[in-house]
Image (cartoon, rainbow over the protein chains, first blue to last red):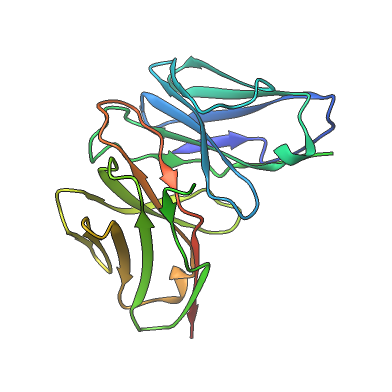
Length: 115
Length: 114
């Protein structure tokens, strides 16, 4: 596998379920990101991790809980979600050093539907 | 309030002609601007970027122009090809020394007509 992978690609869950989204990067990057894309809205940054430490949390509800066990893996744990949380969840990674060459590379996304 | 705006939800261009996609921003702290391309069922793919100290960056058929005083950038694709049909996102970030999230526009759906 190369690049940034995400599993599952599609997920349907009830409001009382607990599920997790997984992201893995094979690029040797040090920073990982979660974004959310809702219908008719731009991609919105949710969380940023740099060297496994969370450096940004964009006022995301606590029903979304990120975890970064190492620089290659990122999880998003979901519990008691609402139907309005249905969206495309995208993971990205970058070298993390800032500057003009710190390009973010995206995975294919997980399409989440909350019933 | 949206800090990065792409005011054209869609754009149709004939194959072989120039495609011009526009983007405006409001945050003067943005220092780097990027364009991403997205096909259905795939994640965004990085295309080209520009630093605020430059006004132009070119890579093959793709050129990005930045007008810092107008807080406006544009992506030119010439000549346009059928495979260019996709959604194009403009994104921006500041010049922090470490990992920094991107602020995205809503995207422009480019359709290349044969």
